[in-house]
Amino acid sequence: MGVQSKLMHYDHTRKLFQIASERGLSLGEINAASLLRRFRIRPTKQRLALAALLFAKGNRHITAEELWSEAKVTKAPVSYATIYNVLNLFSSAGLIRSLTVEGHPTIYDTNMTPHHHLFFEDKVTIVDLPSSAIGVNR
Image (cartoon, rainbow, N blue to C red; front, side, top):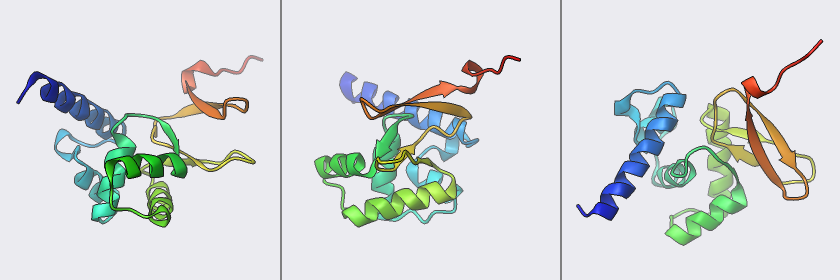
């Protein structure tokens, strides 16, 4: 294994470990199939491909359209309808969170730790804020 592929493997493993630890999974449960099974989701070829794309970049916010673009680049065997169905399935199972912003497409959040969001309308972006960053003064 070359240096570049070792670095890519390390980075991928680190991201999967981060996802697994946030969801209370053990080291042995950090691959996509185990992650889906843990959430009682049958790991089909399409679901595995989308889970790999969705979680490969760590915590992030993504729309179905953005995931569709990534799937096309990697030639993942999924239709546009499948992407919506899988995102809704992952959301209802508690693997990801769906965020609704009026007048915008649904945004999916892979960060399941307790946190808040800031939405910037001019850039149509969402930023995570740790729960500890928000306080109430009386």
